[in-house]
Length: 368
Image 1 (cartoon, rainbow, N blue to C red):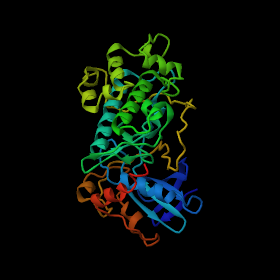
Image 2: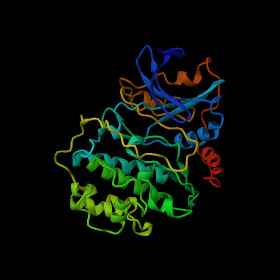
Image 3: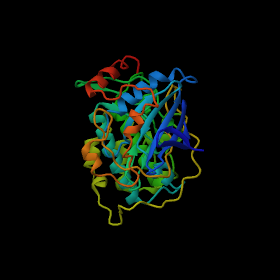
Image 4: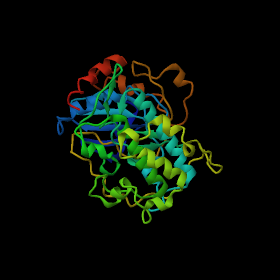
C-alpha cells in the first residue's frame, strides 16, 4: 500500500531490505516519476548514524555515468531517508546465467563500463571495497551503475595515500592480501574484485569460495597449476592472460587500471556487440557464499528492478540544475526538489562544499 511521503510523492513497494532498514520506491503520483529511497529506522538502529554520515559524505561527491546518483537526504523524528537514482534494469547479478555466464561481447561491454566507474572512484581517492555483481545496477539502456557505498572509504587525500586495515567486503571477491596482511593498498584490492566479477560474467561461476591457501581452487590459481576442470576452460587464452594480470596474488605485479585499459582484450571490438538492453535469463539460484567478512555496521543497497530513472544533475543546493532540466525524459524526477523542501519534513542542511565533505570524512581515516 502506498503511503504519502510528502505532497505528491508516495512511498510504494519495498525493493529490498538492508542491515538498518529497507529500500522503497518513491513515486510521484502525477508523473509516475520514481526515486529509490533508503529508509533507516534511527530508533531501532541508533548506531547507524555514523555509518550513514560516512556513506552519504562519500556518495554525494560522486558524479559519473557509471555510478548511481545521490540526490539528497532528509531526517524526521524516527527515520533517515536517502534519495538515490532508481535503476530500471536491476542487478548485473541477475543477467548472469548459472554455470554459463553471458556472451563474451556483453561481458566485455559491462567490464569496460565497470573499469570506467572504478577509475573515476580512484581518481577521487575513494575505494569501494565491496565490488560484486549484486552491487552493480543497470539502467534501461544497460548502462551499469555502481552502488552501495557502505564499505567505501577515502584512501587518498591531498596527494597522500594511506594503507587500509579493515577486513571488509564479500569473501569470494576480496583480494588475498586482505586476509594475509594487517594493512593493504586500496586500489589493487578493488582491481582484484573487478577480475573476479569478469570471471563470473564469462563463466557463471565464482572461481573460489575464498582466496586463501586452504581453498584448493584458489591454491591452483596461485600456484599456476593446470586449470583443466574449472571455470577457466570456458574462457579463451586472451582474456585469461588479462585475468592472470588482474588477479595476480603478488600485489606488486598486479595490473593497475591503466594497464588493464591497454590490454588487447580490453581494447577488442566485438562485431556482435549491441547497445540494446539484453534479455538474459535471470540468475535465480543466487550463490550462498556472499558472507561479509568481519561484520560491521553498514547500509545494504538492494536490487532496484523494475522502473526507470534518467539522469538528473544536482546543484550544490540539492536542486536540479538548469542544464539537467533541459534533458528530462519519462521517469526522471523533475519535482525531486519537493522531497527536500517540503514543510512536511524536518529541515536539515543539504548543500555542502566538496572540500567540507572531504574534511569531514578524513576524520574516519584513523579508524578505517
